[in-house]
Length: 166
Ligand SMILES: [Zn+2]
Image 1: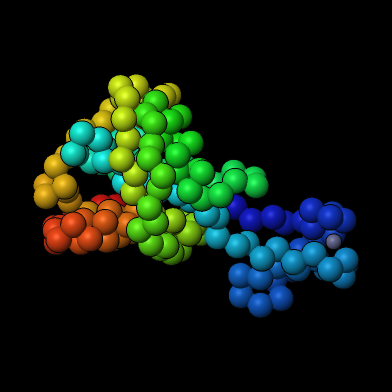
Image 2: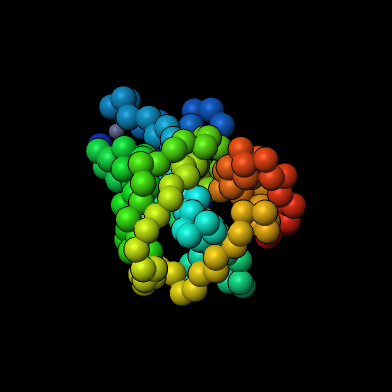
């Protein structure tokens, strides 16, 4: 992951004062906490099935949840509704929180929601394909978004099969 090399406040070099913690060497007080970024991940239920989508930038054929970075001053649930509209052009119900999951590799916090959504699916430019999967046929994976899907399914009394993804 790319790191700041210089203080964004005063442009002095940053020094690592303890593992993974960088502070301004000039003593201006700046600390680069490198907090995880909040990401909303949405289990979108559409006509009784789950919308799984493939991001244009992903290699392979893996289909995942609808996700997006929480905007400046935006709530995570608002973000979930916005992303469903932007990426699928669907109108989402009020989101229900599934759970919150670490995703250390990407320094993200995954905030999992479930919505039911209506309308006609139209993908935006971020996605190039999608599939509709019956809940009982969903596969899950062991990173943050996969765990959100797993916990949603468990709430429906389904114990999904876990697959390995790279
Ligand atoms: Zn500084």
